Image 1 (cartoon, rainbow, N blue to C red):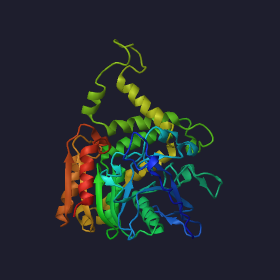
Image 2: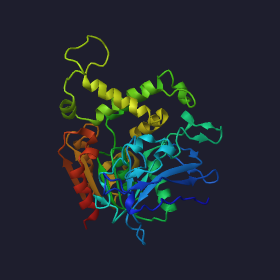
Image 3: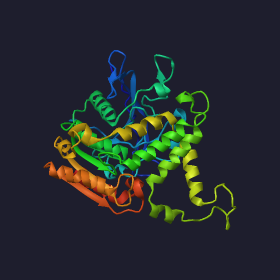
Image 4: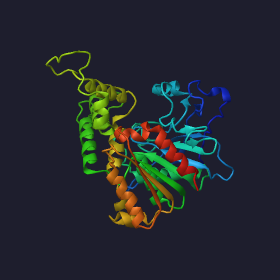
Length: 402
């Protein structure tokens, strides 16, 4: 199969938004076919899928030796638009991108922590998403209709193997580094385990080798809300009404896990919403209720319910020790050849510091060198996005250092 790669256009100096002089500027999405009916993509679930199209973005210049590439992998609701400002947001229907730059624009760009004057940065959207890469909302060539729940179950391992196919198509044999937070951090860990010869440095932020039972429980309740929405229709709701109530409830529940008690108290406390006394009813009485309602409603406007089901299930299934060490995390870590940095955040209770520290200690027991940092922060799991200064400092020195 011949791959078709659309190169991003070069930007001019005047393209930088005036409020972000160190931005990578205007960006354009790239798309590439990585599987065909003749050469389908095999999944861990034991089935194959074709065709597979992957959406990605690229910033900075690739060195002649192609040895300065940093792969940035995203979390549950992220996408390939990692930095800069999407030139075609309106025409692609992703209007929310016009209001904000890429989701990690704070650390990626000229002179920033991941310096695009030095590195070629690639952001890749994973399989099962609703942001350009083949997923449940894509057309199933067998039926001519969206896959819906007939889409095969995908895993973190599938995502990483598909990322290697993307790099192969771009002529990149080995990457300088891979970095991600949360579900992206698990992909960064999987890179170090599954392809130890292909990655020099792996940076795992706010993630551990597996999700806790509590995390599994939150994901289960979120999926329950979606699948029991009257509009879910077994996942075949395309062309009709999306199960917005269930998806909003799932997002509201998940968003609670991204914050900390300290952050919620500081931001909302027990303040009533636009009133001095309660109404003694069941409407939105408190500021925190209004905030979660907004998070749910805005998420429905930009995300697909089926994708949420598939991505959270992939998050559940990931267990590095079971996959690579027969249940022994130390044994799994013996595979690793890259330099690894693990960063936890003190108030994160979705991937708590003790779980991240367990991974770092397993690497030590396996005789591997690892950098572990626990960043004091009141912002919970979202700290890897909020704590720009300490995270940026760690990224810069770990990528640039010898």
